[in-house]
Length: 336
View 1 (cartoon, rainbow, N blue to C red):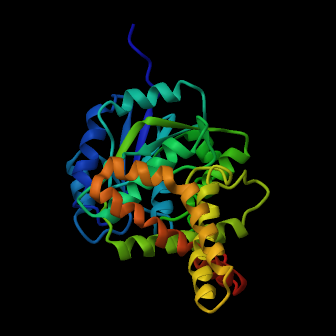
View 2 (view 1 turned 30 degrees about the vertical axis):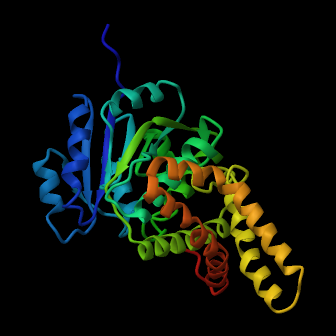
View 3 (view 1 turned 180 degrees about the vertical axis):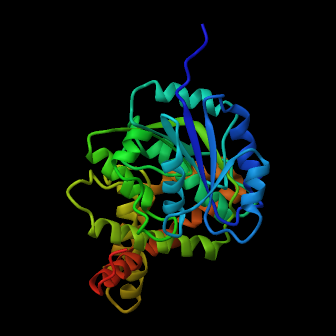
């Protein structure tokens, strides 16, 4: 007997994505069923992204929402006829068999399904490896439940009726930052659940230099602070990289303890002998929380993984000042 497939609308926000779009659309289109749709939403591109998406078989819409990924996704979802909507980023390549795997997860009864990052990163840059493997490690090692409190719109499927009932993504959130975390919190707060599908590993085409990665992390942390400060009662427990605060305790504790090291060494040099113990305590807490990630990073990426593991230090170091910066702009009146 032929398997029943839930009608699905794939929505891809597109902004100057000409270089990656074919690699993204081909594996999606190859596995779509006759009842499925493929929609690309052109968000004010200045290259040939819209024309290319049309040639590759997608229905192309022009974003009618606010500039940014959230507005583009909302535009696509408003036109979707499928029972479920799958949001895919224009630099995210789905693995072979994604449609069958997604259907099995849909059949389990949750309102939404979230894929994971692949441990394999594009290019040869250690910063790109760190970005990808950090998320992969979080999804597969730190999260201890089949259900999560956050989502990432690089490959995120949700019931169309649930999405519309929650009024979609908040397109007041600028750029591609925490619009997914905000939506997930409202979804879980409404009593629905998000199922994580670790077997659907998404390969990202975007590459980062180290300065680009640190700038991305800084902006993301500031956006998370603003998101937490403006939360309302319809939001569930806040998510951090899709995990709960308890699951992200190694990161939260590391963000503080990493500062013990330079401070302790500084006061030790200045004559306070106990400063060396403060530095040692910081190093011990940091190591306890991240040794597993460091080992897994080196095992997966070799030399590149080793260099990437060292990026934990500057990444953790910027969290506290980025949080303080977020508080300052909030106090100054900025809410988004």
